[in-house]
Length: 277
Image (cartoon, rainbow, N blue to C red; front, side, top):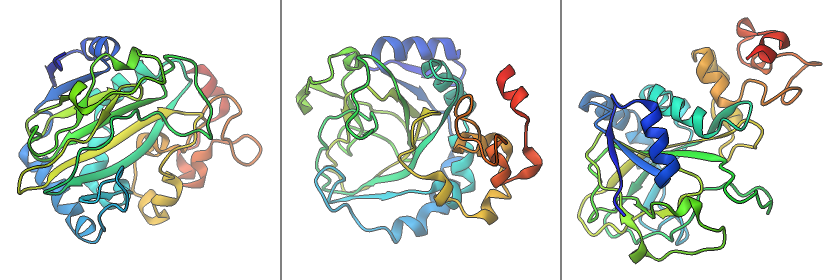
């Protein structure tokens, strides 16, 4: 089954329809060369300082840099891409709010082996969600060209509708090939995995996952970003990071106040405004 490619001008309703049908979609050429150069430059020293993975799943030739909000101005903009946020809001609309779940620069080096085909549903202490219940919207931004040869993310279109215990082989998956600057969007129930890199160059992608506002984040955004950085961030990004109520009476501070006061008291909103949304 092929992967549908759309453009940045495609309506979010069309992107959402592709996700509902296939579980994945590629939006071509969203970032320009200046965007990619900036985020690559800002994260380069962190990538160089990051060791390779220590197990087969994380990849013995793969480097993963987290905490991107604190480390890259351009990464913040990519994470807040309005196309992605609009689509995530639609996919996760069964919850009151959604939040940032994970940020990562993933670099598959030459010789990286193919990753096990898996789902990105978070490990919630063994809890089994109802069949078909989406908890995650994931994005993989291509900072280099993604080809089958250099380890493009492999996906199994339609597998988000399959029973939870079904497993897939590499041969049953399809490489999500895309030009640099494009983004692969997929749901947490889609089966996927990193491909094998048989080239002499690294395949670099920026990962941002979004999840339900009442679930604990995989990457703890409260600890990843220091206070001096929080003071520079806009309100919408802070709230996406989790500095907001997850639902009524969920996540408040100081007897019911807006949790954003822990970072930026000037952005505080009364509970009445939250209930009106």
